[in-house]
Amino acid sequence: MLRPMEQLERKLGDLYQWFSDVFEADREASFVFQRMHLEEHSHVRLIEYQRRLARGNPGLFADVDVDLTALQQTVTRIAAIRSGAGAPTVEEAVRMALEFESSAAEYHYSNAVQQASPEMKRLFDSLGVGDEQHVKCLRDLAARRGWAGRESARPRGPLTSGSATAARRRA
Image: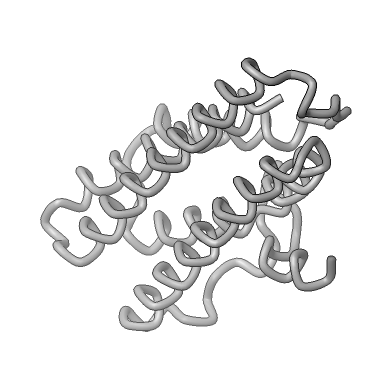
């Protein structure tokens, strides 16, 4: 149940590391993406811990039926970015990261998994705070660069419109 979320967080971390390397000459952008890389890998460690806890105490966790299609499509999209014709511009990378971090797919999956136990709810609340911090950091970078308000209004591909933050507020 947690493996797909772990895979998504790992792929995002790897993507952000790649962005950091690609934009090495742009210290600010490189730093933002490097920090996000480290935070995504911290999320992976949290999920790995939760998986170990679930394996050791299966009776504490309910089975949850979750549609993984959007998460799998997002992981596929991340892989396509990395294997594409070339590196994006900093602005394109920021827009892509904003789409991923605001993904309703991730929110809906995590919301469903939280039903398994209070421990899962705490885990995903923590991950959600991290995603919100990433969105703020990316928007701040975009604003400093004069890109504010130019983010795509409707994410493409497997991502749906709306943000995880907005969805959390509605819940």
